[in-house]
Image 1 (cartoon, rainbow, N blue to C red):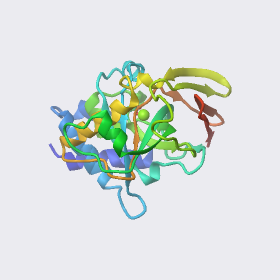
Image 2: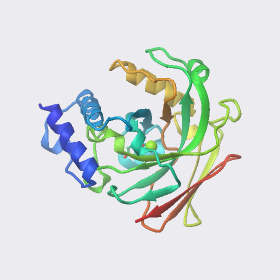
Image 3: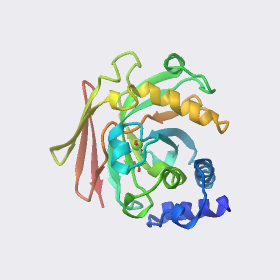
Length: 257
Ligand code: OOG
Ligand code: MG
């Protein structure tokens, strides 16, 4: 199978914001390893000066998310500089059917790599922890996919926004941090950090282990989105989403045409 060919097909759908059929309907026998290679090739083709790899995201680390998409395994994706929102405004240009989800982000000060990293290693390597929201946007019709499809599509990565304020890793119990997501003033989702593999630090541990299998590592300065705490909600033009993180204020996102 020509993984390069599949990767360039997916890249073009990501760049033109057009839906596609699941690749698993058209290519038989693709493995999860193939899918990660497709993801690597596709994202590599978008890297250029000014659009570097700035971090990684974990996904499907909570039961709520796994159930809503019908995939029972965690996965990871790559974050490029161009995905980071500079302002709390989301333009629908370049997106298909975006959804917003609350996340906790880790920012690293040291490299992390290897098959036996522990939460302790993660704390030693973490500069700060920050509230964040991710905007996901599957390129597949109806946001419907298998694990192989979604991994190849860079884990539905589209945009992300990290809060202005950073916190010491030790300032809060990140598993006990409560989150309330509102859309146009109405509560639409609630959750707590523990929804993410029991504790968001576990998500970073798992990411390092998964990356090790393909010889990758987390570099100093990188951001890690640890995975949605609640289900993701669809957003449309004119919506305002606010996510309140206990004792850390809120992140607001205005959805524009
Ligand atoms: C896959 C990406 C999931 C998360 O935080 O769980 C994800 C999807 O739901 O489209 O980003
Ligand atoms: Mg996410």
